[in-house]
Image 1 (spheres, rainbow, N blue to C red):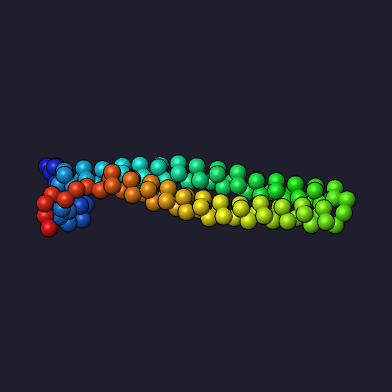
Image 2 (cartoon, rainbow, N blue to C red):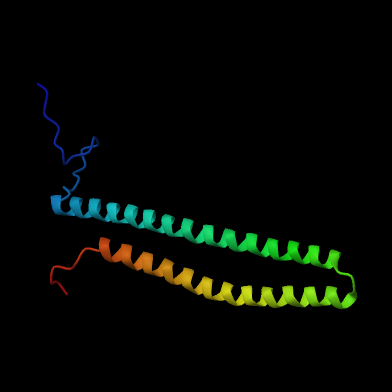
Length: 127
């Protein structure tokens, strides 16, 4: 006579604990929250990456422009002036880089905080 398998027993006959339905739902909601957070983070990373890529292009353009100015300079003072102008612009870009880096880190932390706060289950009054 065939016996019906007990869902709480493994094939070795070891009794397995039943997972309460509320606990299973909690696991599902946490997994969904993690997926949402990863999606938000990826979107933020992409946005930041595009901005930094534009920044790298601007730097390449700056130095390319300097090379053109120096090669077209008719005197040493003209070449030095072009170089000084480019260095001053590069210093300004470095200051902007610092601000951008700070803003990007703030965006990341905001994204993480927002995503985590949406996915964290609230306590049920237990301390």
